Length: 269
Ligand code: DGL
Image (tube, rainbow, N blue to C red; front, side, top):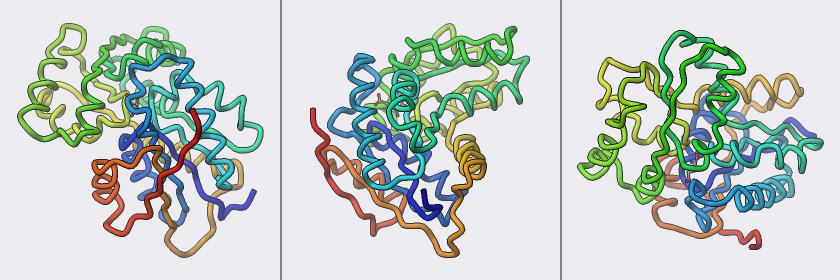
């Protein structure tokens, strides 16, 4: 595998762009190929079987595009389909999920704190965060809450307004999350509402998102596999969606500038 090959990144929609943005900041010379599965968004309410099927199809697509590594920039797919993606393409290229890096990070930095996790129904229902964190620290205090309206709300461009604030405040006021010391944003869409979440907690809680932590983890994995780009020029970025939406285009431009290369591709049922 060539060091100059692109990094494949995927999510159900715009959420993974928060991770892709962090990867581009940390590794500016790397090429990236982003896939947003907008036809099937939201992933959070789908069955594990469907998420597995979509994730494996996308992994095949990214491999067919010559990617040297895959970042599953989606907590729901990382929770429900990481194993299947690794079984499918892991012998060819490294596969990174967004959960392990964050579980390691909070264990290192906040081991004695009350940790709250918010994410989709799929992620929270899988119980993967408490499981991973408690494996690293058996005394960890972890509670979680599914916040299923947030990802579709953000995907539609509803953030930093009165509607989003009302929904966010209503979720965060719930009993098992309101008094957390550390809140994990266990959905890659949520960094887009991080400001509003910080406003809700004020100084009472630290808010942790996965983007920079995952970018650092990816850099380490690429270095260990001798796959870090040695290019001196800035990387190129290609974007694919399974269904063209204006909100996806708008968000991608907001992250990567006006001249983005956005393509629609059909991956099958
Ligand atoms: N951004 C995703 C996640 O991290 C998916 C949200 C969704 O499609 O429901 O879980």
